[in-house]
Amino acid sequence: MLIKMTVLAIAYVAVSALLLTIAYQLQGPVATAKTDRPAGSSFLIERFAG
Image (cartoon, rainbow, N blue to C red; front, side, top):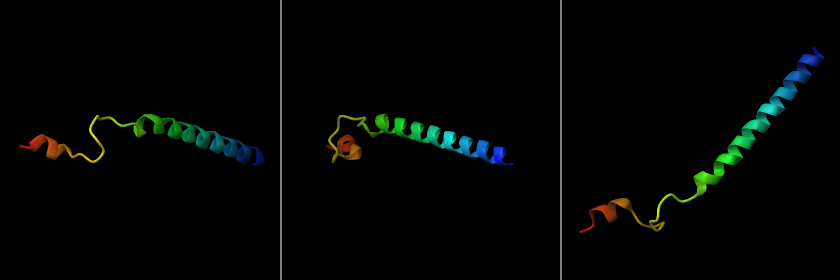
């Protein structure tokens, strides 16, 4: 029983570390801006402006 609990604890720590690593790697590209527009501009205003 002790061996089973130890293996489960190690597996839990390994999966948690893997998920944290994936989460931190995904933050980089998502945080970057994907447009050249200024932050305050609105697409609809630019699109339909006279």
